[in-house]
Image 1 (cartoon, rainbow, N blue to C red):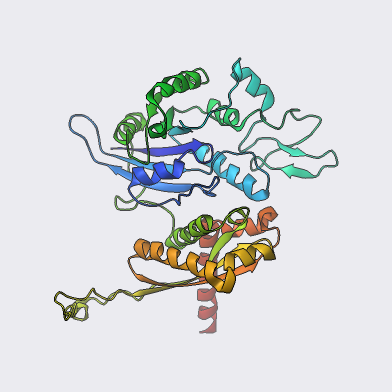
Image 2 (tube, rainbow, N blue to C red):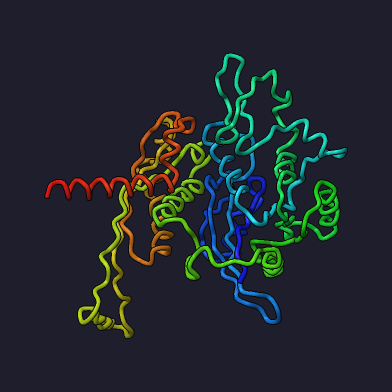
Amino acid sequence: MKSGFVSILGRPNAGKSTLLNALVGEKVAIVTSKPQTTRNRITGVLEVPAGKGKRPAAQIVFVDTPGVHKPGTQLDRRMMQEVYDALETRDVVILLVDASREMQLDEGDSAAVLEAQVPEAGPGAPAFVENEGTEVSELGSGAPALDREQAPRKRDWRSEDEFVLQLVRKLDCPVFLVINKIDLIRREELLPLIESLMKQFKFAEVLPISARKRDGLETLIEKLVDYLPSGERYFPPEQFTDQPERFLVAELIRERILMETGEEVPYAAAVVIEKFEEPPPAPVGKAAKPKKPRPLKGGGFAEPVLPVTSISAVIYCERDGQKAILIGKGGAKLKAIGTSARKEIESLLGTRVYLELHVIVEPGWRESRGFIDTLDWRKQLEDMAKRQADEVEENAGGE
């Protein structure tokens, strides 16, 4: 048995979430054509059965990350921290490249140039401060601050493509170069792209794929299993993600916002689940006897009536104008978002869904570290557990 963590790294819109969903066979990450759709580390678990011959069974834990980009807000910096965290605990890293997009790379000694241009990133990396001592960018927990006079002068990287490669060069694990969207380019264009990237780093494997068409994924999985260490499962065989249903639901709502709105609205929107009431568990024993299906007049039988999950969610935005766009004339836009999101949520939960949406203006939330912390589902679970413990303690004290 083999098992391990595989982090998927790349620029926005490289197809990381599409690849994750295709590999896992479940929708664990939302996908849109807009860049920076993914804001958190998304985990997807793949069970690989033992193959004919010598290939052992394996469990691959894929970690999708936000697209590597130059941070402009506190939210952006948090997204980049998610990238650094994903690179800390990994056995293999996939650098995913969009074959249809021209990359901006140095033609000379890129390693030397990048070392001079890009500051250390990740835990322990220097953060930048103004001369007065005001911190403006945090690039890792526990990071020492540097005055701008001490910091590298070229903080604006020559290109974000080079910055991705700089992150890769600092890794001490196998790195796969996976070139995605090969169905969008001519075959003769692929080789020059591979050759140019091979000059930048010594990749363990180079694999062209199309995540959308599932072309090349079997080969990718086989190669990954070869590089994983021996070990036991990290998750039960039937589990395909570590994300709670509440977070998945919030992401499905945000996906519809991204698809239904334009300009700055999708990037200024955040979704928080306020209420998530699951239907009561099905009875067991004699009471669990299933009801006979109701016959229809034209023949056949009616579909069984599914239980209802009641969900209330808040959509946060930063300005009144954004709120007006999200609601739409007579509430039409909010209704469209809710209707399309409800269908996706029902498919996810396997129940009927009553979905209630509200829009609240939270000015400048993307620059509020405290507010951004509340969006992390891991923090939400911690807070829920604390509240439940406090309630138990209060009830025990009342008795």
